[in-house]
Length: 141
Image (cartoon, rainbow, N blue to C red; front, side):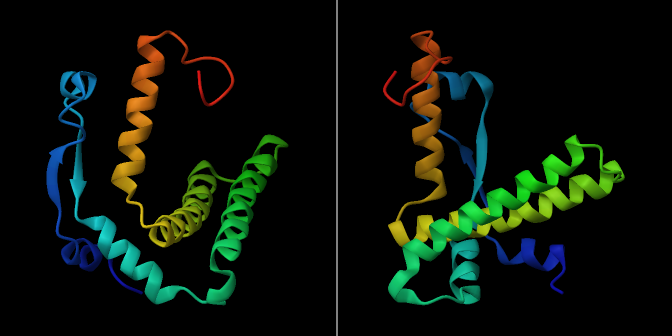
């Protein structure tokens, strides 16, 4: 098993503002460590084991499956299955790691970065907040 320290040492991190053009981000002092994304995407490429001819289909189904596993753990917690809180949290984090793997593979196949997705989401949500439409339905509100 690779140690967390060893993983961190392989990532070249750069601390940078999330979005220089966003006044809300500047106001909050929001920053991000860059550099980990390419290392993680390479890791997902190296560990990918599926037929390339159905890559996107496989990844989308895999993502849905892993999200389902997260929800299954949560459902069991809701119904009262006894699990120590720390064990429950660890189980959720483990499943979320699988979700992240599929998400990273999908972004890699699409040629899109985590950063670009994050910036687009921040801009969308700030716009909705400014227009007081953060609540509601529909992508184009």
